Length: 163
Image 1 (cartoon, rainbow, N blue to C red):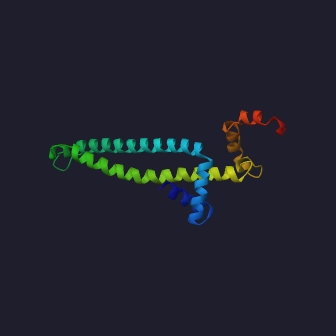
Image 2 (image 1 turned 135 degrees about the vertical axis):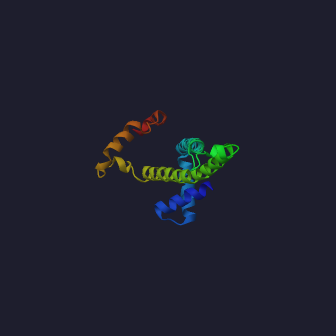
Image 3 (image 1 turned 45 degrees about the vertical axis):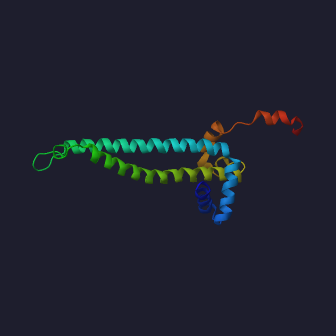
């Protein structure tokens, strides 16, 4: 499933066949495993929080709606049923499935942006955002320059004759 999703992204971005895209996505993941692991953890956390917020908000709003809205006879749904817990749980289950579908789309969008960033980082040296031809991306280049990966001090001390 994991390679499938990333292979589809590479197929869409680069127009390669599925097998070639699967190979490319695998090696892209291997080369950038730390960044992908960190982003995946943040992504999963935000998806879980989003689902919980949507389900809880929907459950709360549906409970309040069923408790307060009256029909033509002046009765609320709470007056007409034994308990509002059953209908509220049903609404919350439906809300979970809807949130899952929408947030899966959001998850895929985050993965596509990550792949585009990594592809740009590897294909363009320096990155396209820092290229003088992309003057409209100057604010982004400034942020990348300030917050981007720092040079590894070990590289400088490992091979002093490289200068």
